[in-house]
Image 1 (cartoon, helix red, strand yellow):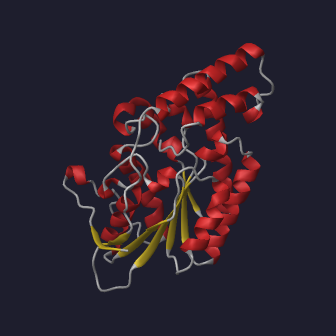
Image 2: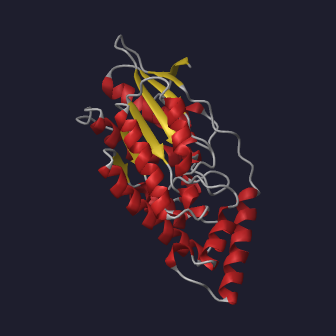
Image 3: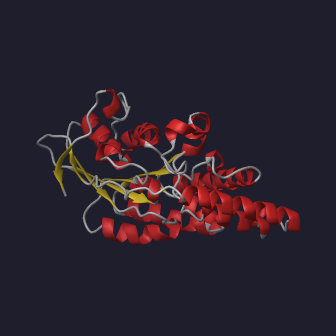
Length: 287
């Protein structure tokens, strides 16, 4: 699944386990030493591969005489498309092009997501995004909450407030919940098993809050976790942590049906454009 945690994620997960994160309680000295070592090794493996900054994908997608639908993308590095270099591979570009194709009208994409963001950072992103009217928002968040040992209750509280605020602004909201961190290969067992348990628990709590707040939840962990498990070499970028172009295409395909449904455009084929298969993802004008 798409991931958005920093290079220190493994070490933080190990510390969380040792201190009782995820409701496991205190671990013995030998268990702590093992988890801490695994965290350090995972950090080195991920940090050892440098990635470029996320591509600049903001702009207008599609053509037509109708006014643009304004789409904003909020959240963490998965939302920002960290791990790929080309605009056409960015999650926001794929989703915006898919909506524009179905709607038959242009979509103006604005990305406010930031690498390393947690649920508490959504408020600031929304303040900037809502300087102008927003028709729809796509949010990807949660992984950094897990690695920073933010309690599920606190994390969900921030997310609930964010969804309600966007809905109050008249925006349709689709949230991709916390990914399955258990598919990240550089994090070895048993630390990986703990990461899976914690991320799945947060995703379940997020889903309840999102729906109650008036948004739509997409479980990328459940939908794409098995694919990232079995096709990791293809679905992850060079650091084996963040998604590759194939990973972002899969995420866009998972998100699009819910977004089209929220916009009343769900009676058509919902695959994301795929430049690798002859489709087009084109920015008509830059913002």
